[in-house]
Image (cartoon, rainbow, N blue to C red; front, side, top):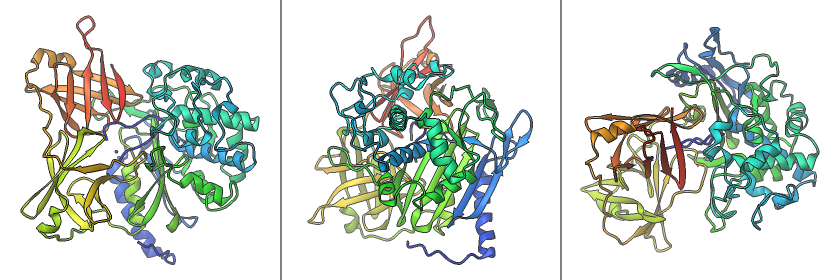
Length: 559
């Protein structure tokens, strides 16, 4: 799955009847959830707090691991942790509160609130700020962002820092996760309300809902039960205190902190009209449509997707020392939230599995159904997305269907329903689409809890594309010069190593993958469509690389 957070994640991540409460069933559910969490979080490592509630009743709440590694303090359920980008749903609802009061319109131009903002004649709406389609450069993607982590900035100083950057695309043309847009949404809140963002959230959301353990994070303020965060240490399997980050920088994109109990109050309020009328609040959970008609999986401050007939509404967060995830399933009135002070692993997949467990859905692969070779032949072909470099090739041997993505190996896929296939050891599903005549026309890969636009591969009449080949003759001396750890974002590194004349890359918290040479300085991966360029050496040392993936160019600096 892809985790969307204050800092981006790279390379990859029925009908339910509400039954009467049964203590025996609750105990069984608790045991299952406990097993899922205990497998991920160890007692002597930075930990996690998890809460599961349904219809406002707590089904499970427990803390794991350490809150403070230096003082030997164990994690407790009422500890206060940074939320990262779960903040964005509070910002979105704050804007909707002002819309409800007639002080803001979602169709308002940004320049109504910031007249001097350099839009270059473009109209950027408040809605486009909230749904990540503005095209404004996200300041956390700027090369100098790590250099300003410790710098306290006013809201306008932060906006001045990114406002003159070139647009990434025209408003409404694409979806791209954008922290700058939520900083600007925070400015809209301040201009329209006459209050600071922190005061507005405190007085208009936290206080009415009784969220007494929730705050806008201010570093020098004394806050009982606030804990510290941890990242990866220099040696494998060790931990380090998270690098300092001025909490003036995340602002409306990621500066809130809370407890799982307070977030339970927050989720319960969303079933009521305590804050916003239901018809208006629904817009936050309505997928946005781009200018070309493509749908995204994002509304205002939340992503959404269908999972086995249920609507999952979700968001994750990641900020120095902390990773978070929350999932609400409205038709089951279910909420699962995990707050962690351990950035070496993300709770997103675990939270997803807990939600499935609470819904009584299996965690294993779908049950395969048998299709004839004639039926399977319908899917055979070359499917392309955007360009001939991004393709999937579906082949059939005997009665077994295979899928191969550009630059990758081929893998068996198995049918589990009409036009639905799954991989044996990967959560991605392949959904095929047909035209009115019944002919297969496209292929849509689906992973759990996506955010942006769906990948859609259109069927072509082409033969199997020519695969990218490695030149395979880069000298060992040059490979050795690339070896090192490169920081792309806070708590996110790429570690480059070499063995037996081959080069490998490992991202924080992810498996190691081999890199293949296109040239002496450019390498590509086979597991995803991505390339890495190593910059020329300075004084004999390669100090930078650039990761090209998903239309973004992300610089990494040698540590």
